[in-house]
Image (cartoon, rainbow over all chains, first blue to last red; front, side, top):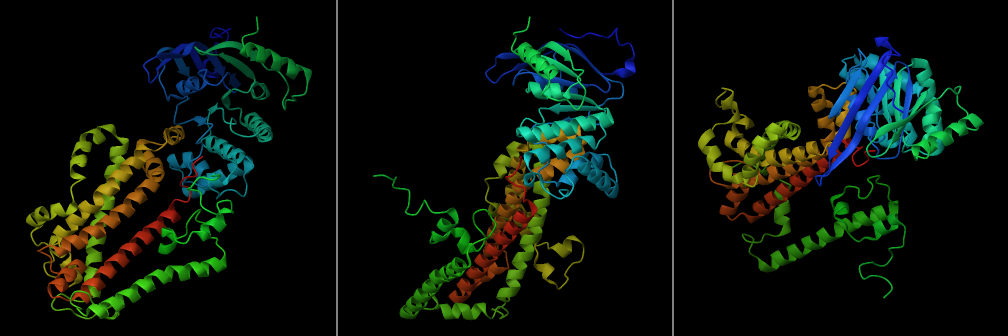
Length: 262
Length: 318
């Protein structure tokens, strides 16, 4: 089930992102053609929290890179909302190498502001505020290697939020942290999203995470990657995992992910 | 046999104990901390190791002294005492060529000037070549041909081009009666060549090895091309740049001694060395050699200290 709701949502300004029939093929080192994305269509509205769930290596990252402008699609139509521009108000949080190892936490967070030419004192103040907001008060002058995995991802989120993004792309940002830290980070991200109402596209291979975070969950099928199913999540936030609704949804998403639905 | 032959006794001991059991380690002899760099070692072994550090040189010096006395040909093999006597009087004038100290100072000045030029040019060109494909492809053949060339081979060419021009003359001062009159442009050029290639190739490797993720991250956060150079390429390749600088400085110090020993030089520690040798003053020759070696070690140590201070993050990228 793909979504093509252009006529349902005529208001242009509400659209953050639109993809229609996007394809992408890679050529591997051995010369074989690998179809990473096949006919992906997607419409994301302003303020939505869209999670994309799929197995590792199914093309989710490719999709995110296309949206971010880090790669070009072979075929199809991709349009960003009017005022969205890469390098300006689209932020990207990666799973690994999310911070510059030669910069302290506060200097990492203020990187985007520094690139925009803000004076030192101002960016310092704003970076410190953001670090406090993500719970890293007191670690301003720590280097990334002195922080734990969870703390690094907190700093990475603060770094992305510093440029006040209108679209936040997250590529398995909590993939490398342990379970309890992951839950904490999910809670923090939900809070931040509820405060700022930024549009978020969040890629994960964790079904539970996709349901806890997303206002919409897109299930990505493998080889070639395409959106096979979509779930609208209306559970109230903060979401409780130990409810019947949640587990029902979990089973549903899980089934559609492994192709057992319908 | 239960254990392989390469496994020495006591390998099941804690690591720090093993570390201290090693009778000698190059890093310990040179005096910088080994292993994780934390420098924490038990105090007893500290005293023992500094004693151990002293004992071999002292024995060697004793053998030298006895052998020299027995040989009794000081113009070939002077006793230690005569060399030390030269070293503790570094201001003594030797013939027309000046003292040990003044000549050392002149050599250092030449090296520092040539090395600074090499560092600036090498880092700049290395970053440009590493990040811009067109520049790399067009310059790489030239670099590959000039790089293996011994810097000394440039000396005849440098003397032909710069004649006997000195640094003050370059700026129109003529003869200034200062130490700068001894800084010949030809010498500086040869030093520059010596330092340039290690800095360039290491910087190039460093820049080419910058993780693509850091570039993507910086671009996503709004870095423009010039800002990428300054805030990503430069800091990310800093470990390699500093390695290049250390190698380059070492090579510069090699090259200056050789260059000063060749005809055309009138000052410098290398010149004093060859001049003393021509006058059968072997005590001065050996004193000069010790000074050259000592300064080389100090330069290397200084660079290492600067390195470890600047790039504490190195090897800890996550």
